[in-house]
Length: 251
Image (cartoon, rainbow, N blue to C red; front, top):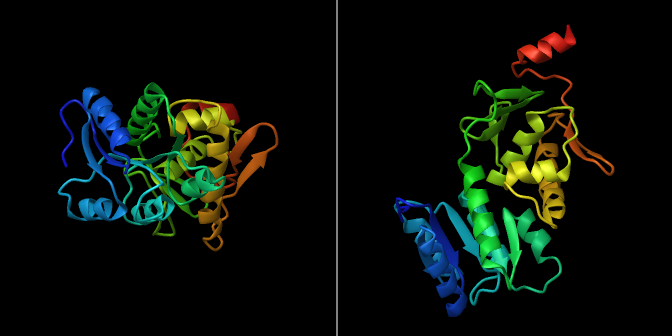
């Protein structure tokens, strides 16, 4: 599945024919290359056999052959493309669970198609961003190495398995260590937009990132909550190159 010249390739996993057709029409009109499957089995088969993977997945949770949350976890375990869950589920814990299992965003049906398009554009734009470090060199905080060029993180030479959203969150915190970033600032870095539920989504991804970092023995890269303000990454041993302004400020 190759992206068109005008846009990225999107895989729509949706069992409702009317919704699937709406998404295909709107996204193709916007210049995206769109493939559609109606079951989890078809999605797994397509991803397994595709010559080129999609740039983004739109995933319904209410599928006929598998719980979409389970499918989300299986896709995330094998692939790194962004996943937007787009569903009519009424199960209270589904949004949190989907995000914990690797989804990058969560949109409830019925949705505003313009808002959904904006979220897709923002997430693809954020995914495509290159290094945010001024010179492109990796940042090192305690035992953690953050490679902005390859968009990967490793601890003592072993890669930390992060979703694209978790990496962007870590990158945002690591590029301003010991500085409090509020939820709106983090949402803008992760998705490129703010909305009413961005704070809740940020909180979920912070918890996931904390769990993964805390599971590494002796890593010592704490992400702390500042009540009423946001989050900061404590970095007592910062080895990333300092800017000239930072050197002058500390002189």
